[in-house]
Each structure stands twice: as structure tokens, then as C-alpha cells.
Image (cartoon, rainbow, N blue to C red):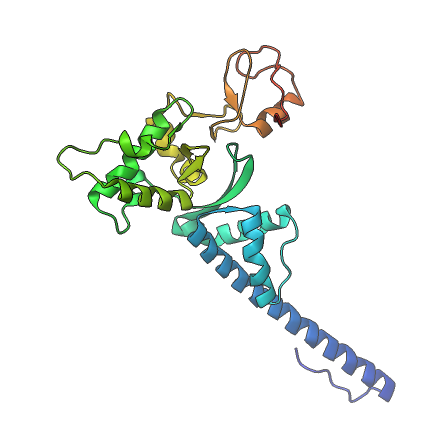
Length: 272
């Protein structure tokens, strides 16, 4: 922005124009700083998402608060604002085979933000810096949990009942515990009440594999076509839906979309 010519301006008008020009320059500078700061926030937040893999809203807030303060940008003040920020980040990483995905996780009654690789398979998930036996342990453990009717196993079954190829050297229990702890921290598994469940990241990143290889135990919600586990079922036909999906559907009709019988299962979660 260039300063205007004052050749034909009287003194008062000249002063007003100078004042307006200075204010506009400051606003322009402030906007530039905010834009640059927000780009830095996005990059820092993406790095944090990669490091943590699976983030609750509380963790998101804990990450964004110092990031935004450091770069002097407004912190997203609502879930909608956080989702908008994530959408902007996704626009920049989608071509890199990466995505940030929100998923509701019924086991914890919480929603998580998951960092996922869009072309992941069980082999590619586990192969970074691990031996062939350790990679196979991840695949076998994933398949074992996914093959169970409710997709969870007792914690000790993760060490005692996972069989690797007979020709390979068996893993020590202590190493299995280390690996399971690592994969749990990454969101691939979740340990709750001495049971091990498929974690949020597995449900996002490995959804195609799970649905293709474990169709007997893992189904898609017929309303949104996305994988559904541990959620609400029709009392008549036992078909499972995402709670939000069936809640929206029942606002139009009060019949199960699968069997056509009157829907009687309470939508609200039990607090007991």
C-alpha cells in the first residue's frame, strides 16, 4: 500500500488521511501476523497429532492453548471451531496419504481425533523398527480381538493365546507387554477393566481391513455405511447402529430401518 499524494489537501484533511493510512497499515500488518501465526499453529498441531495419534478434546485444548499463545493467535473456542481447524489441515495433507478423523468411541463414551494414514495395513502399521516376529504379533493380536463377537479379549489372552508361526522365535512376555503398551498409546488398542479392545485408530486406519477380513463380527452401520462397534442395537433384530445415526433417523420414522418393527431400544445412554 502506497501513501496518497497530499498536494491538493488542506491541513485537516491531510491529517485525517495520514491517520487512516496508518491505521490501515497496522490492520494489514496485524492480519498478516495472524495468518502467519495460524499457519504455524496448524503445523505445530499436526506434529502433535502425529506424536499422540489419538487425542481427546481435553488433550487438543492442552496442545492448542500454548501453541496459540506462543504465536499470538486466537485459540479455537468451541468444538465447531476445532473441527474447522482440522478441516483446513486436512486440505493440506490429503494428498500425502494422511488424514485427521474424529470418531466417537462408545467404550469410553468419548470422541477422539485420530491421526491416520489412508493406505495403512496391519503390516505397514507395525513394521517401523520392529522384527518380523513383532510385526506378526501386531497382526495376530489385531485379528484375535477382531474375531471375537464383541471385539475384545481378556488382557492376559494378549500374551498367552496369540500364536506366532512355529518356525519363529517366540516373543518374551515382557516384550509383548512393551509392544502392547506402545500400540495402546498410539490408539490401536484400548485397555479398559482388564479387557483389551480395538482402539480408535484401528477403527479409522484399518477399517477396510477389519471389515473385509472380519465381516462376521464387524459390520457397517447401514445408515452411514461406516464401521460400528459397541453401540446401540434394535431390540427386535439386534442390528447395530451408531447412536447418532439412529437418533436422526427416528426423528422421521419410529421403525427399525432393518426389520421394520417399532423401535423400542432407549436412545439415551444408561448412567447406571
